[in-house]
Image (cartoon, rainbow, N blue to C red; front, side):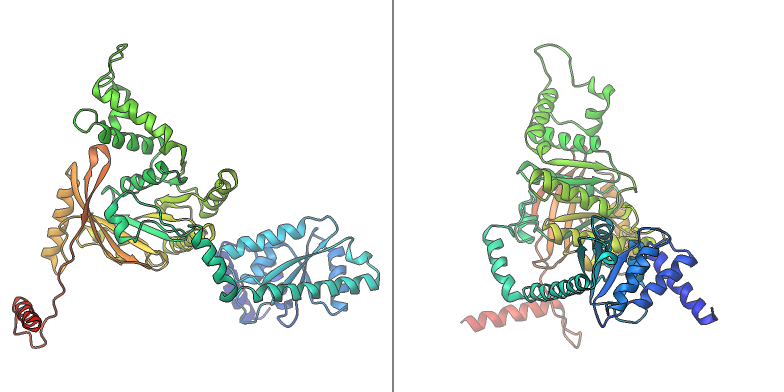
Amino acid sequence: MNETNTETLLAQMNELQMAGQEMTADRLQAVVSLRAEMTADAPFYVIPAASKKRDKETDTQFLLNKNGAPAAVCTPDELTAALEIDTGERLPGLLFIVKEGRSTAADRMKTALEAAKMKGANIPDTIVTPTEKPLLELAPSELTAWLAMTSANIEREKEKYQHTFGADLIDLDNEAWERGQREPLSTGFPSLDQILDGGLYPEALYSIGALSSLGKTTFVLQIADHIAANGRDILYVALEQSGAELRAKTLSRLTDEIDHDHGRLTVTQIMNSLKRVGWKTGKPGYMTSQEKAYTRAVEQYRNTIGKHMRIIEGVGNITVSRIRGDAERNIRYRGQAPVVIIDYTQILAPAADKLTDKQNVDRNIVDLKRLARDLQTPVIAVCSFNRDNYFAPVDKNSFKESGSIEYSADVLIGLQPFGMIPKTDDKAGAANKATVAACMDLTNRFLEAVILKNRNGAVGTVMFDYYTLCNRYTDKGVKPKAPRVIAPADGKKKNAELLAASAEAESKGKK
């Protein structure tokens, strides 16, 4: 092997390893050879390898090649890897996976290709072509008829493709819209719904971020509770807090809603047995106000929220693929796609061990967007912020390991303390840091939810009271936008003078 070929193979090996493919030199050589055999000029036949020797499969390959049908023998992993190598040559337009008799190898190969396609690989159209008996046992006339049948499959694929254009799909869209499939889900916060044009839309990815411990989990959980209480299933992927702690947060908020003055309880009072002594009397026929509020909260949770809330716990071991499987299982068993919530995105299991943190977050975000689109359900990805946001207001670059978060999300929402100012210099940065520190010390925080991006709607800011002791957000309305002022070109007139002159001109015009 010459030096150029060695360098090429090493580059291809690295490329496949970065894509998550385990690759040895021998296996890479087999994959590269397979890729070289593929032709884009005719449908390519793939024969699943059933044994290491591959004698029988190789004979089948020779038979197909002899009859003008380009073919190769390979395993599902080899085929996937071969398609992922970028050689600069065109891929086959169509793959025929040969399924001989009752063998399940072809079906496994088709499944592997579909999984690779879900991860973003460029996979050609693939058709499993069955035979009643192995190709080597077919008479020449039977083989000719079978090859003709595959040609008919090509015509059927062409016909299906003709119906993928808008003229055929617009009627289906109208029917879906009439059935209410594009109706938004209310977040439970009227002002937030107002800016989001009604709430959370199917097929949309929402990224909600904040500094650590500011209150993003509580904010998202309260939205999830509202949706669940109104009958829509929630799949809450908790990668940081336990399901018991999240349920305790909900119960704490409910006690505050039920009896704010006398019945409210903190998470610690609910979960800690020693703290429970202070509000549970244990006396028959007598309950404190807190005990009454807690009893009502448990009953309310059991009959409303709890019927539609499923929490999956994990720490760095849950992949987007696993989440998709759970969401699809919900569709099968309960007849509805759940709203999916990831808390939080940066600690999802990596898509591939060889990728950087940013590359893994980017790939996971793209897969979450694909999940929202495929299942036609809202997906909420909770995100952490960069440490720079202790010193500056939220913006699109605030999202840690951003990139795809900024570009793939349909809606970006950043939580921040009220009073953050533009970081024009170090003094402004220090003032913002002091604002954040002061906010963190409060049990009753005044926060802003800044809608930084809204692909199909408006942007703006919603103000909230956040009572940390009982995990409750209260909508305080949409923050008025500051009037836009255009500075004069010569810089001599002040903005106030411009506004006054504009108002005077407008008044004269009306007269």
